[in-house]
Length: 273
Image (cartoon, rainbow, N blue to C red; front, side, top):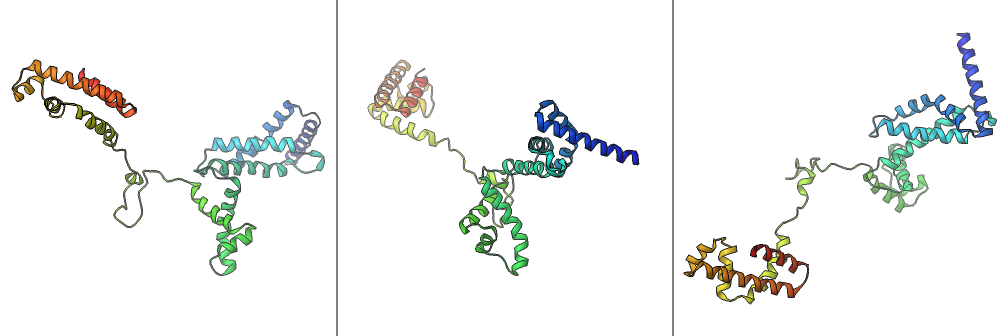
């Protein structure tokens, strides 16, 4: 045991000399030695925050940033143990990671910290006051304005987001339904309204026989031979009436211009093909 204590003492002295050398030279190789010597500290501190919604690898990375900052800022001449100095710095980086990454929305850091302070205070202040604290009570304790307290409290709901697959919990007919069930959907018919309006206006240039042919061909989807039998004319006449009607519609839509007209004209072109 005495040898272990002596070995620990020798290690601490060696680390102090290494820190002194780095403070004097800022040699990257010495810095790397110091990082490797304190990796166990990062792993220990990061493991304390495991299971809180952030991957352990990300926490280790944040802790590593804190360790590098602590090494660069540490002054061995002050006589303070490095671990005592480094722990708050490493923990600060890990907590900053949670503030920056775990909120569902990007919220200003000031409001994030204020929201967390409100949450902590709301657990202790009722017992101290003997009643539920008001906004002014909380603002007075935190040195903030009432408006800031209200804003931070409302933004606290942005810490986590609900999945659209989550079930509703309200006690009405929507209970048990997923949140996504209440979302609106695109109505495919809405995209056709403008096309229909343009075509309806264009159809006014057709005579009665041309409109009848177009109706039977593209609404009732009859073949040219069926239309010919229905109207008592030849199939060649039906083909000629259809081609003439499509040419009139195309000319009318092209002269009207606009995006919707171009879409409708494309459909007329497809129909003529």
